[in-house]
Every structure is written in C-alpha cells, then in structure tokens.
Length: 146
Image (cartoon, rainbow, N blue to C red; front, top):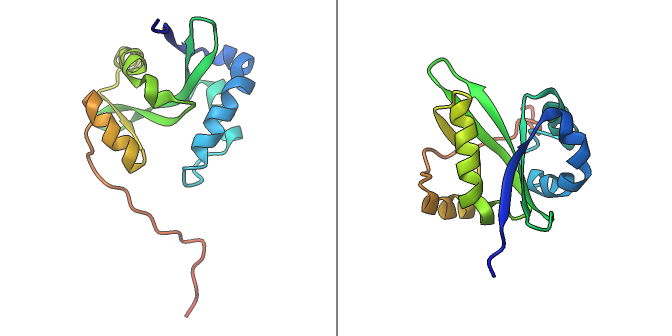
C-alpha cells in the first residue's frame, strides 16, 4: 500500500511548535553549506516571516522531511530560493514541488532556485529543473600577507 504524503507550509507563529522536530533535518543540511546560516539565523528568520518552513509528513503524522524557502527580490524579478532541505525532502520532491511552486507563484515569484550538490542537481532534472550556472568560492579568511 502506497503511503499518503501531506506537504504544507508552516505559518511563522507555528514554527516553535514544530521546531524541535524539524531542527535535526535542517541542521544536517546546513553541514553541507558554506556557513551562510546558523540554526539560530534560520529559526529567527522563520519566526519573523522572512523565510518559510515547509514540512512533509505521512498519514500517521510522522515527519518525513522539511525545507526552508525564501523569496528574494531582484530589480527585474522575484525568485523563491529553496535554501535548506533535509530528512528525505528530495525523495518527496514531486509532491512538495507542486505546493512550493503554487505558493511561490501566489507570492509573485517568477522562478524557483536552489543551491545543491551535483548529485541532487542531477536528480532534479527529472522534475524539469536545469542547471543554470556553477558557483565557485574562495575563502578569504585565511589570507597570507607577502
């Protein structure tokens, strides 16, 4: 029997109710990041509404995955970024993407973007995502003087 999956966003006022449950999923994802955010940064941004929490759970209420999105305004367009995703989020992406896309469109976004590892980017091609550019980085914290 196929399990039923529910995807929903979480209002800022309800974040603390779920925070301890989703925190572990999100922390693991941040380990793959480049130090842009701490868990405290994400928590505060979810509470003030500048980021949006998404959760996926089964018909028994078991949390399957969580993700965090943020709308970013550029001079010519508005983009919804999937900043953090964890706990098997990409395994339920087909269901989740419809919900996030609808929310993003309703909030004026023209596209959805995500910074991912190469393996995830390859999987996302199955869902009509495309690689648009490669980001490179140089750490300036360990500079040497002549």
